[in-house]
Image 1 (spheres, rainbow, N blue to C red):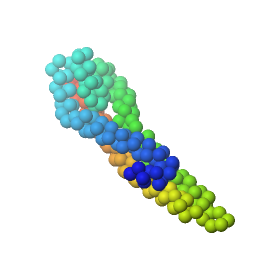
Image 2 (image 1 turned 180 degrees about the vertical axis):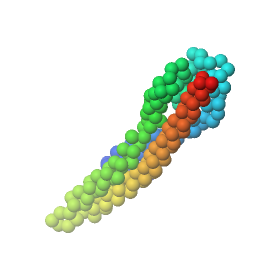
Image 3 (image 1 turned 30 degrees about the horizontal axis):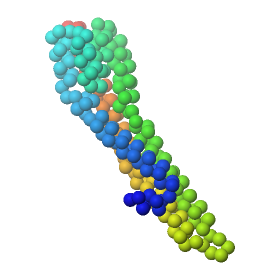
Image 4 (image 1 turned 135 degrees about the vertical axis):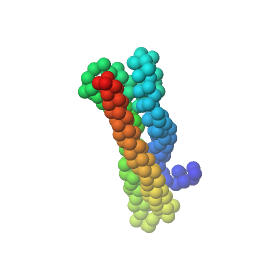
Length: 202
């Protein structure tokens, strides 16, 4: 492995750093963006049952906020349960924007790595071409320097694509996953509003 890195020249180290960051972000997002942690099943029914049994208490709100992102959205709505339906919806939307921002954390960095990795590989290719042309002299080319230039050009291009392809796949996957969670939370939050205010209207 070290021989490959040495043959690829100094531009490969930037790509190696980008690959380490990309792997770390993919692992972190894979652990964080799990449905059981974001939109746990049965939470809406539990919240509605608790509200009907004992109303809204500081302890319930505290537990909801610490429970999950969906719990944070529910807690924001329950804080304004005594207000109008519109105010309750606005508080839920405000909390939803904050939760959405948290769900999309690090995705911009991952998308940037996916976009610039081929360019970094291209930069290494240019460096390799410079090495190739630098090996040409009046008396002919230096075979060793020529081979080194070709290694730099090819290794960097290939390594850049190896980083970009899985990073882009992961970025698209996590983006779609976050969007689906946001839609799910919106639907459940609106359902909470309807259930709570429907009960009050009755």
